[in-house]
Image (cartoon, one colour):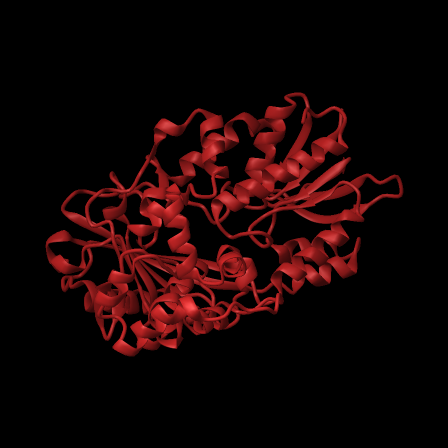
Length: 477
């Protein structure tokens, strides 16, 4: 029987272990997690309200996570967003304005909504419409999201729409974010069709379901998102249930080395007792942040470790505020609002999580999540919890209206939690995978490599299991 070790019990590690166990129930699997819980940056609080500390849903356009849910037999436990207030807004000169209908990430699919929006000046609107005649870029090297968006849509559209959307999704600076890594679909559209608008027109004629959804989207395609009724941590628990006997919580991996016979030797230390143990694995899967993998693999492959360490991470904080629904301005009800950097405000975005999904709090309250920090406002995360809560309450009052003190408030911090896909990131990942391929039996998975979203993490973990299965004769492929 082959022995397989997995380091890290976030979603990537859990999915890898779950898939391995399903493929071969008798496989010898050990899943290590240094903390006392599973899920990584996915965490749900259930008292006094259902509050997601990390991701509160996932998209189905990339279908891997949805396929996993169906394979688990849990699809009936997932719900879609509410029908009311299914719009996203953007702050414009201190006020909330709906994102133009059909503007999806950075693709304008409905010209009429672009012409009608107060977000852009006449000149800005004409510049967006001119995108159809902007020549495609011949250079195939990577570029930043800012450079791509300004080149195709103009600076005003970039500043008012693209930059805050990107900041809200990636907690990243668009000026340094890799276009090929973060939004490769639009790079492909430009190469194939020569224009994002032309691509939308051609796809509309083909009447693809994807385009129809984009036609009615306001910044996000909400019909393509689902969430567990009982919270994301409940889903993580369902993933962990079949592998509980293989799960080692409060167990930190202290060192990794590759023996002369090709076996991976792992030393673990129990964080509560200090007990040390040595394990031997035929295959090893690292499901940790890249900087953790870099530290553990430095003695095995210094070049690989150096490349892993070069992937930067951003820290962020989320203030959760429970306010009286009657105090929210009627025009402010929406699923969430994003904040352009040119507005010079403290928050990146505000999500009305209770308006997105049922069962989050009593009907007379609104739960708001105020996002702070990230790469855009990195200096804020050094402030105290009290200071950040003051900033969050001030932002919520200014933009959404509640003037009374919140009936509930808490602050969540996520230090070094979001990998930053800098320009050139795809090339770095290629170099990393090249080094990994030379180390027989090693896999790297997680959000540092091929997508920060939950579906991408699921896809990466399951692909890694397939590769391990091909190398391991006792595993079914």
